[in-house]
Image (spheres, rainbow, N blue to C red):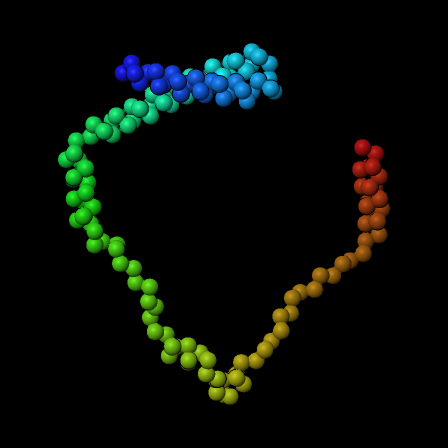
Amino acid sequence: MTGKIRYFLLIGFIGFLITFAVSAGNNLFATSLIRSLLAFAIWFALSWAGSWVISVLKELPPDVEAQEEAALAGELGKGGNLDLTTPDESKEIGDLLKQAPEGELSEQQFTPLNPPRLVKTTDDKAPEELAKVVRHLTEQ
């Protein structure tokens, strides 16, 4: 473990140097130093956590991996095939493209849309009220 701590310290020191070099040109010395120390702690903790995760993954018993592989092998055939063919609809498309008989056309007539008209009524007070509003807004 002591050999690993040296690597953790080295990784933290590299993070310290990079952060100090980047922030020293734009910040005060104290601010750069504080940020670099914080970066050292973060990089040290990340390398420690990464090492711990790797060691936990290495210590998994091999039968767990074998069980997972067996479960995956049992489901190997499920969801493996994808059918990309579409049903034959050429007859239905042909029916749509055929012209309708003349009798059916005469029953369907075009009627244009008649929306209601908007009629503006003129008030004698409307221009006066508008002028009052404009005067009130320009005073502020």
